[in-house]
Amino acid sequence: MARRLPRTPRTPRTPRISRRTAALAALALASLALFAVLVSLQTVLYGTALPLTFILGAALCSAPLLSLRYPRWAIAMFCSAAFALPLLVVPDQATEAPWPWSVPALVTFVLFVGVVTFVHGARLGVVPLGVGALLSLTAPLLRPEIVATPATAGSTTADLIVTTSVAAAVFLVAILVAGRVRVSAELTKEREHSALEESRRALVEERTRIARELHDVIAHSMSVIQVQASTARYRLPEIGDAATSEFESIAATARGSLTEMRRMLGVLRTEDQAAELAPQQSIDDIPALVDTIRRAGVTVGLEMTGAFTDAPQAVQIAAFRIAQEALSNAVRHASGAAVTVRLQADLHAIGIRVRNGRATTPPAHPSGGYGLRGMRERVELLGGSFAAGPTAEGGWEVIASLPLHERPSSETTAPITQENP
Image (cartoon, rainbow, N blue to C red; front, top):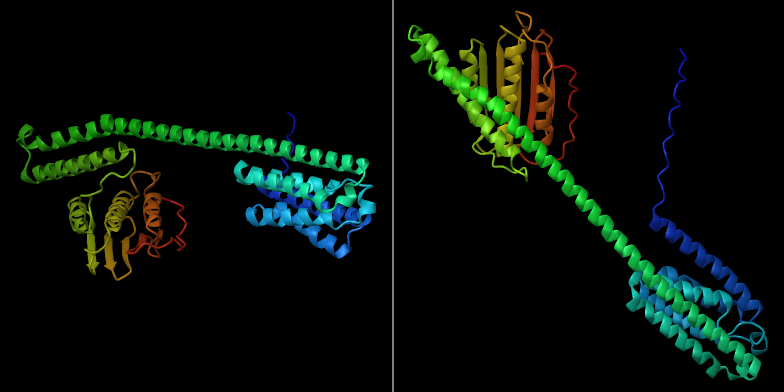
Protein backbone atom coordinates (compact mmCIF):
# COMPACT_ATOMS: atom_id res chain seq x y z
CA MET A 1 0.00 0.00 0.00
CA ALA A 2 1.44 3.32 -1.01
CA ARG A 3 2.27 5.67 1.79
CA ARG A 4 0.57 9.02 1.71
CA LEU A 5 2.73 12.05 1.80
CA PRO A 6 1.86 14.57 4.51
CA ARG A 7 -0.08 17.53 3.27
CA THR A 8 1.72 20.80 3.30
CA PRO A 9 -0.28 23.51 5.07
CA ARG A 10 -1.67 26.15 2.78
CA THR A 11 -0.27 29.56 3.23
CA PRO A 12 -2.97 32.14 3.90
CA ARG A 13 -3.80 34.26 0.92
CA THR A 14 -3.09 37.91 1.12
CA PRO A 15 -6.22 40.03 0.84
CA ARG A 16 -6.88 41.22 -2.69
CA ILE A 17 -6.84 44.90 -3.50
CA SER A 18 -10.31 46.18 -4.26
CA ARG A 19 -11.14 47.48 -7.72
CA ARG A 20 -11.76 50.95 -6.37
CA THR A 21 -8.31 51.08 -4.75
CA ALA A 22 -6.62 49.74 -7.87
CA ALA A 23 -8.40 52.29 -10.08
CA LEU A 24 -7.47 55.12 -7.74
CA ALA A 25 -3.82 54.02 -7.71
CA ALA A 26 -3.77 53.77 -11.52
CA LEU A 27 -5.28 57.25 -11.85
CA ALA A 28 -2.71 58.68 -9.44
CA LEU A 29 0.17 57.08 -11.35
CA ALA A 30 -1.19 58.33 -14.67
CA SER A 31 -1.53 61.88 -13.32
CA LEU A 32 2.02 61.80 -11.95
CA ALA A 33 3.45 60.50 -15.23
CA LEU A 34 1.57 63.12 -17.26
CA PHE A 35 2.81 65.87 -14.95
CA ALA A 36 6.43 64.80 -15.38
CA VAL A 37 6.15 64.65 -19.17
CA LEU A 38 4.13 67.87 -19.47
CA VAL A 39 6.57 69.96 -17.43
CA SER A 40 9.53 68.74 -19.44
CA LEU A 41 7.96 69.23 -22.88
CA GLN A 42 6.31 72.54 -22.05
CA THR A 43 9.58 73.98 -20.84
CA VAL A 44 11.83 72.65 -23.60
CA LEU A 45 9.57 72.73 -26.67
CA TYR A 46 7.35 75.71 -25.90
CA GLY A 47 9.70 77.92 -23.90
CA THR A 48 7.31 78.41 -20.95
CA ALA A 49 8.97 79.53 -17.72
CA LEU A 50 9.65 76.60 -15.42
CA PRO A 51 7.84 78.01 -12.30
CA LEU A 52 4.70 78.72 -14.33
CA THR A 53 4.91 75.31 -15.97
CA PHE A 54 5.10 73.63 -12.57
CA ILE A 55 2.07 75.52 -11.23
CA LEU A 56 -0.13 75.18 -14.29
CA GLY A 57 0.97 71.59 -14.94
CA ALA A 58 0.15 70.62 -11.36
CA ALA A 59 -3.31 72.22 -11.68
CA LEU A 60 -3.89 70.47 -15.00
CA CYS A 61 -2.73 66.97 -13.98
CA SER A 62 -4.20 66.92 -10.48
CA ALA A 63 -7.69 67.83 -11.75
CA PRO A 64 -8.69 64.17 -12.51
CA LEU A 65 -7.92 63.15 -8.92
CA LEU A 66 -9.63 66.21 -7.45
CA SER A 67 -12.73 65.58 -9.56
CA LEU A 68 -13.51 62.38 -7.66
CA ARG A 69 -14.77 64.37 -4.67
CA TYR A 70 -14.91 67.99 -5.82
CA PRO A 71 -15.86 67.95 -9.52
CA ARG A 72 -16.83 71.62 -9.82
CA TRP A 73 -13.60 72.88 -8.25
CA ALA A 74 -11.65 70.48 -10.47
CA ILE A 75 -13.41 71.74 -13.62
CA ALA A 76 -12.69 75.37 -12.70
CA MET A 77 -9.02 74.61 -11.95
CA PHE A 78 -8.52 72.55 -15.12
CA CYS A 79 -10.16 75.08 -17.41
CA SER A 80 -8.12 77.93 -15.93
CA ALA A 81 -4.85 76.05 -16.43
CA ALA A 82 -5.85 74.88 -19.91
CA PHE A 83 -6.68 78.49 -20.84
CA ALA A 84 -3.43 80.02 -19.49
CA LEU A 85 -0.90 77.38 -20.53
CA PRO A 86 -1.13 77.87 -24.37
CA LEU A 87 -0.79 81.62 -23.95
CA LEU A 88 2.54 81.46 -22.05
CA VAL A 89 4.62 80.11 -24.92
CA VAL A 90 7.36 81.51 -27.14
CA PRO A 91 5.83 81.99 -30.65
CA ASP A 92 8.90 80.79 -32.56
CA GLN A 93 9.01 77.52 -30.56
CA ALA A 94 5.23 76.97 -30.49
CA THR A 95 5.05 76.86 -34.30
CA GLU A 96 7.29 73.77 -34.36
CA ALA A 97 5.15 71.67 -31.95
CA PRO A 98 1.43 70.88 -31.54
CA TRP A 99 -0.41 73.95 -30.28
CA PRO A 100 -2.56 74.98 -28.38
CA TRP A 101 -2.79 71.44 -26.98
CA SER A 102 0.48 69.65 -26.42
CA VAL A 103 0.41 65.86 -26.43
CA PRO A 104 0.50 65.45 -22.59
CA ALA A 105 -2.07 68.25 -22.20
CA LEU A 106 -4.31 66.52 -24.75
CA VAL A 107 -4.05 63.19 -22.88
CA THR A 108 -4.78 64.95 -19.58
CA PHE A 109 -7.82 66.64 -21.11
CA VAL A 110 -9.15 63.34 -22.42
CA LEU A 111 -8.51 61.62 -19.06
CA PHE A 112 -10.23 64.41 -17.15
CA VAL A 113 -13.35 64.31 -19.34
CA GLY A 114 -13.53 60.53 -19.01
CA VAL A 115 -13.16 60.52 -15.21
CA VAL A 116 -15.77 63.24 -14.64
CA THR A 117 -18.25 61.57 -17.00
CA PHE A 118 -17.77 58.09 -15.57
CA VAL A 119 -17.97 59.13 -11.92
CA HIS A 120 -20.52 61.95 -12.02
CA GLY A 121 -22.56 61.29 -15.14
CA ALA A 122 -22.97 62.78 -18.61
CA ARG A 123 -24.64 65.99 -17.40
CA LEU A 124 -21.53 67.07 -15.52
CA GLY A 125 -19.06 65.45 -17.92
CA VAL A 126 -20.20 67.58 -20.85
CA VAL A 127 -19.12 70.75 -18.97
CA PRO A 128 -15.32 70.21 -19.12
CA LEU A 129 -15.68 68.89 -22.68
CA GLY A 130 -17.53 71.97 -23.93
CA VAL A 131 -15.66 74.54 -21.85
CA GLY A 132 -12.26 73.05 -22.68
CA ALA A 133 -13.02 73.02 -26.41
CA LEU A 134 -14.28 76.65 -26.36
CA LEU A 135 -11.32 77.92 -24.34
CA SER A 136 -8.87 76.27 -26.71
CA LEU A 137 -10.47 78.26 -29.57
CA THR A 138 -9.63 81.53 -27.81
CA ALA A 139 -5.89 80.82 -27.84
CA PRO A 140 -5.46 81.55 -31.60
CA LEU A 141 -7.50 84.73 -31.16
CA LEU A 142 -5.34 85.96 -28.29
CA ARG A 143 -2.04 84.88 -29.88
CA PRO A 144 -2.56 85.56 -33.63
CA GLU A 145 1.18 85.69 -34.30
CA ILE A 146 1.41 81.93 -33.77
CA VAL A 147 -1.12 81.21 -36.57
CA ALA A 148 0.08 83.93 -38.92
CA THR A 149 1.15 81.54 -41.68
CA PRO A 150 -1.05 78.98 -43.49
CA ALA A 151 1.12 76.11 -42.25
CA THR A 152 0.80 77.07 -38.59
CA ALA A 153 -2.91 77.83 -38.98
CA GLY A 154 -3.49 74.40 -40.49
CA SER A 155 -1.47 72.72 -37.75
CA THR A 156 -3.47 74.53 -35.06
CA THR A 157 -6.77 73.65 -36.69
CA ALA A 158 -5.79 69.99 -36.91
CA ASP A 159 -4.70 70.03 -33.25
CA LEU A 160 -8.05 71.47 -32.16
CA ILE A 161 -10.03 68.98 -34.27
CA VAL A 162 -8.07 65.97 -33.02
CA THR A 163 -8.30 67.05 -29.39
CA THR A 164 -12.04 67.74 -29.52
CA SER A 165 -12.78 64.53 -31.44
CA VAL A 166 -10.79 62.29 -29.08
CA ALA A 167 -12.30 63.96 -26.00
CA ALA A 168 -15.84 63.56 -27.42
CA ALA A 169 -15.17 59.89 -28.21
CA VAL A 170 -13.92 59.28 -24.67
CA PHE A 171 -16.98 61.12 -23.36
CA LEU A 172 -19.29 58.71 -25.21
CA VAL A 173 -17.27 55.65 -24.14
CA ALA A 174 -17.38 56.79 -20.50
CA ILE A 175 -21.17 57.11 -20.71
CA LEU A 176 -21.50 53.57 -22.11
CA VAL A 177 -19.09 52.05 -19.58
CA ALA A 178 -20.75 53.83 -16.67
CA GLY A 179 -24.15 52.55 -17.82
CA ARG A 180 -22.79 49.02 -18.12
CA VAL A 181 -21.30 49.18 -14.63
CA ARG A 182 -24.56 50.52 -13.24
CA VAL A 183 -26.57 47.73 -14.88
CA SER A 184 -24.08 45.13 -13.65
CA ALA A 185 -24.36 46.47 -10.08
CA GLU A 186 -28.15 46.34 -10.27
CA LEU A 187 -28.03 42.77 -11.58
CA THR A 188 -25.65 41.76 -8.78
CA LYS A 189 -27.96 43.34 -6.22
CA GLU A 190 -30.92 41.53 -7.76
CA ARG A 191 -29.07 38.21 -7.63
CA GLU A 192 -28.21 38.77 -3.98
CA HIS A 193 -31.83 39.61 -3.26
CA SER A 194 -32.99 36.47 -5.08
CA ALA A 195 -30.49 34.33 -3.18
CA LEU A 196 -31.65 35.86 0.10
CA GLU A 197 -35.28 35.17 -0.75
CA GLU A 198 -34.40 31.60 -1.75
CA SER A 199 -32.58 30.95 1.53
CA ARG A 200 -35.46 32.52 3.45
CA ARG A 201 -37.96 30.30 1.63
CA ALA A 202 -35.82 27.22 2.35
CA LEU A 203 -35.66 28.22 6.01
CA VAL A 204 -39.44 28.64 6.20
CA GLU A 205 -39.97 25.26 4.54
CA GLU A 206 -37.56 23.58 6.96
CA ARG A 207 -39.23 25.21 9.96
CA THR A 208 -42.63 24.12 8.65
CA ARG A 209 -41.40 20.56 8.19
CA ILE A 210 -40.02 20.47 11.75
CA ALA A 211 -43.29 21.88 13.09
CA ARG A 212 -45.26 19.24 11.17
CA GLU A 213 -43.11 16.42 12.55
CA LEU A 214 -43.42 17.75 16.09
CA HIS A 215 -47.18 18.07 15.73
CA ASP A 216 -47.69 14.64 14.19
CA VAL A 217 -45.35 12.67 16.47
CA ILE A 218 -44.48 14.39 19.74
CA ALA A 219 -47.73 16.26 20.29
CA HIS A 220 -49.75 13.14 19.50
CA SER A 221 -47.75 11.07 21.99
CA MET A 222 -48.11 13.73 24.70
CA SER A 223 -51.86 13.85 24.07
CA VAL A 224 -52.08 10.07 24.53
CA ILE A 225 -50.13 10.30 27.80
CA GLN A 226 -52.38 13.07 29.05
CA VAL A 227 -55.56 11.16 28.18
CA GLN A 228 -54.31 7.93 29.74
CA ALA A 229 -53.20 9.67 32.93
CA SER A 230 -56.47 11.64 33.21
CA THR A 231 -58.67 8.55 32.75
CA ALA A 232 -56.60 6.18 34.91
CA ARG A 233 -58.80 6.71 37.99
CA TYR A 234 -61.85 5.66 35.97
CA ARG A 235 -60.24 2.79 34.09
CA LEU A 236 -58.45 1.42 37.16
CA PRO A 237 -60.80 1.85 40.11
CA GLU A 238 -58.62 -0.37 42.34
CA ILE A 239 -55.73 2.14 42.52
CA GLY A 240 -55.37 4.14 45.70
CA ASP A 241 -55.49 7.85 46.37
CA ALA A 242 -51.68 8.19 46.20
CA ALA A 243 -51.52 6.61 42.75
CA THR A 244 -54.49 8.72 41.63
CA SER A 245 -52.67 11.86 42.75
CA GLU A 246 -49.58 10.80 40.83
CA PHE A 247 -51.61 10.17 37.69
CA GLU A 248 -53.21 13.60 38.01
CA SER A 249 -49.75 15.16 38.36
CA ILE A 250 -48.63 13.31 35.24
CA ALA A 251 -51.70 14.55 33.37
CA ALA A 252 -51.05 18.15 34.50
CA THR A 253 -47.43 17.92 33.39
CA ALA A 254 -48.53 16.51 30.02
CA ARG A 255 -51.03 19.35 29.58
CA GLY A 256 -48.33 21.90 30.37
CA SER A 257 -46.00 20.22 27.90
CA LEU A 258 -48.70 20.34 25.23
CA THR A 259 -49.14 24.05 25.89
CA GLU A 260 -45.40 24.57 25.50
CA MET A 261 -45.49 22.49 22.33
CA ARG A 262 -48.22 24.72 20.87
CA ARG A 263 -46.18 27.82 21.64
CA MET A 264 -43.11 26.27 20.03
CA LEU A 265 -45.10 25.27 16.97
CA GLY A 266 -46.39 28.83 16.74
CA VAL A 267 -42.81 30.15 16.75
CA LEU A 268 -41.73 27.63 14.11
CA ARG A 269 -44.67 28.51 11.85
CA THR A 270 -44.09 32.27 12.18
CA GLU A 271 -41.99 33.43 9.24
CA ASP A 272 -40.75 36.61 10.91
CA GLN A 273 -39.63 34.59 13.97
CA ALA A 274 -41.35 37.10 16.25
CA ALA A 275 -44.18 35.12 17.76
CA GLU A 276 -45.62 36.38 21.01
CA LEU A 277 -43.85 34.79 23.97
CA ALA A 278 -46.39 35.63 26.67
CA PRO A 279 -47.68 33.96 28.72
CA GLN A 280 -44.43 32.02 29.02
CA GLN A 281 -43.23 30.81 32.39
CA SER A 282 -41.35 33.33 34.49
CA ILE A 283 -39.41 33.44 37.74
CA ASP A 284 -42.69 33.37 39.68
CA ASP A 285 -43.29 29.85 38.30
CA ILE A 286 -40.02 28.44 39.70
CA PRO A 287 -41.57 27.53 43.13
CA ALA A 288 -44.22 25.46 41.32
CA LEU A 289 -41.46 23.82 39.29
CA VAL A 290 -39.58 22.95 42.47
CA ASP A 291 -42.75 21.48 44.00
CA THR A 292 -43.16 19.26 40.93
CA ILE A 293 -39.60 17.97 41.36
CA ARG A 294 -40.20 17.38 45.06
CA ARG A 295 -43.27 15.26 44.32
CA ALA A 296 -40.98 13.03 42.26
CA GLY A 297 -39.08 12.22 45.47
CA VAL A 298 -36.14 14.61 45.08
CA THR A 299 -35.00 16.78 47.98
CA VAL A 300 -34.90 20.32 46.62
CA GLY A 301 -34.16 23.49 48.55
CA LEU A 302 -35.24 26.87 47.16
CA GLU A 303 -33.99 30.30 48.17
CA MET A 304 -35.10 33.49 46.40
CA THR A 305 -33.90 36.92 47.51
CA GLY A 306 -34.56 40.28 45.93
CA ALA A 307 -37.25 41.72 43.68
CA PHE A 308 -37.86 39.83 40.42
CA THR A 309 -41.02 41.50 39.17
CA ASP A 310 -39.21 44.31 37.32
CA ALA A 311 -36.98 41.97 35.31
CA PRO A 312 -37.52 42.03 31.51
CA GLN A 313 -39.64 39.28 30.00
CA ALA A 314 -36.67 37.72 28.20
CA VAL A 315 -34.73 37.49 31.47
CA GLN A 316 -37.76 35.98 33.23
CA ILE A 317 -38.11 33.25 30.59
CA ALA A 318 -34.37 32.52 30.51
CA ALA A 319 -34.19 32.25 34.31
CA PHE A 320 -37.05 29.76 34.39
CA ARG A 321 -35.61 27.67 31.54
CA ILE A 322 -32.14 27.58 33.12
CA ALA A 323 -33.56 26.49 36.49
CA GLN A 324 -35.75 23.90 34.75
CA GLU A 325 -32.87 22.42 32.74
CA ALA A 326 -30.47 22.41 35.70
CA LEU A 327 -33.05 20.61 37.88
CA SER A 328 -33.75 18.15 35.07
CA ASN A 329 -30.03 17.39 34.75
CA ALA A 330 -29.74 16.88 38.51
CA VAL A 331 -32.68 14.47 38.57
CA ARG A 332 -31.38 12.45 35.61
CA HIS A 333 -27.69 12.29 36.44
CA ALA A 334 -27.50 12.65 40.23
CA SER A 335 -30.10 10.22 41.47
CA GLY A 336 -30.66 10.46 45.23
CA ALA A 337 -28.67 13.67 45.67
CA ALA A 338 -30.14 16.77 47.28
CA VAL A 339 -30.45 19.86 45.10
CA THR A 340 -30.28 23.52 46.10
CA VAL A 341 -31.68 26.32 43.95
CA ARG A 342 -30.74 29.91 44.76
CA LEU A 343 -31.90 33.04 42.93
CA GLN A 344 -30.71 36.50 43.88
CA ALA A 345 -31.71 39.79 42.26
CA ASP A 346 -29.98 43.14 42.59
CA LEU A 347 -30.05 46.38 40.63
CA HIS A 348 -27.96 45.03 37.75
CA ALA A 349 -28.47 41.29 37.32
CA ILE A 350 -30.23 38.15 38.45
CA GLY A 351 -27.97 35.38 39.69
CA ILE A 352 -28.96 31.71 39.44
CA ARG A 353 -27.12 28.89 41.22
CA VAL A 354 -28.27 25.26 41.06
CA ARG A 355 -26.11 22.83 43.03
CA ASN A 356 -26.50 19.12 43.69
CA GLY A 357 -24.54 16.71 45.83
CA ARG A 358 -22.79 13.50 44.89
CA ALA A 359 -25.02 10.91 43.18
CA THR A 360 -25.83 7.91 45.37
CA THR A 361 -26.35 5.66 42.33
CA PRO A 362 -24.82 5.73 38.83
CA PRO A 363 -26.87 7.65 36.26
CA ALA A 364 -29.46 5.56 34.48
CA HIS A 365 -28.72 7.10 31.08
CA PRO A 366 -25.37 8.28 29.72
CA SER A 367 -24.92 11.91 28.83
CA GLY A 368 -25.50 13.01 25.28
CA GLY A 369 -27.91 15.92 25.27
CA TYR A 370 -27.52 19.62 24.67
CA GLY A 371 -28.80 21.00 27.97
CA LEU A 372 -25.69 22.84 29.07
CA ARG A 373 -25.14 24.22 25.59
CA GLY A 374 -28.71 25.47 25.45
CA MET A 375 -28.37 27.18 28.83
CA ARG A 376 -25.14 28.80 27.78
CA GLU A 377 -26.66 30.08 24.54
CA ARG A 378 -29.62 31.58 26.42
CA VAL A 379 -27.26 33.42 28.77
CA GLU A 380 -24.99 34.67 25.98
CA LEU A 381 -27.95 36.02 24.01
CA LEU A 382 -28.75 38.25 26.99
CA GLY A 383 -25.10 39.30 27.47
CA GLY A 384 -24.64 37.43 30.75
CA SER A 385 -22.14 34.93 32.08
CA PHE A 386 -22.44 31.17 32.51
CA ALA A 387 -20.37 28.48 34.21
CA ALA A 388 -20.97 24.80 34.92
CA GLY A 389 -18.74 22.14 36.39
CA PRO A 390 -18.10 19.65 39.20
CA THR A 391 -17.81 20.75 42.81
CA ALA A 392 -15.13 19.77 45.31
CA GLU A 393 -17.59 17.45 47.08
CA GLY A 394 -18.24 15.44 43.91
CA GLY A 395 -21.47 17.15 42.93
CA TRP A 396 -22.33 19.52 40.12
CA GLU A 397 -23.02 23.24 40.02
CA VAL A 398 -24.58 25.55 37.46
CA ILE A 399 -24.05 29.32 37.83
CA ALA A 400 -25.62 31.94 35.60
CA SER A 401 -25.86 35.72 35.73
CA LEU A 402 -28.52 37.48 33.65
CA PRO A 403 -28.14 41.27 33.30
CA LEU A 404 -31.28 43.32 33.74
CA HIS A 405 -30.09 45.92 31.22
CA GLU A 406 -28.83 45.24 27.69
CA ARG A 407 -25.06 45.21 27.36
CA PRO A 408 -22.47 43.58 25.10
CA SER A 409 -21.50 40.06 26.05
CA SER A 410 -17.93 40.45 27.27
CA GLU A 411 -17.66 37.98 30.15
CA THR A 412 -15.75 34.79 29.58
CA THR A 413 -17.82 31.70 30.14
CA ALA A 414 -16.42 28.46 31.42
CA PRO A 415 -15.88 25.81 28.78
CA ILE A 416 -18.46 23.06 28.64
CA THR A 417 -16.77 19.71 28.27
CA GLN A 418 -19.49 17.31 29.39
CA GLU A 419 -23.19 17.05 30.06
CA ASN A 420 -23.08 14.66 32.98
CA PRO A 421 -23.20 16.49 36.34
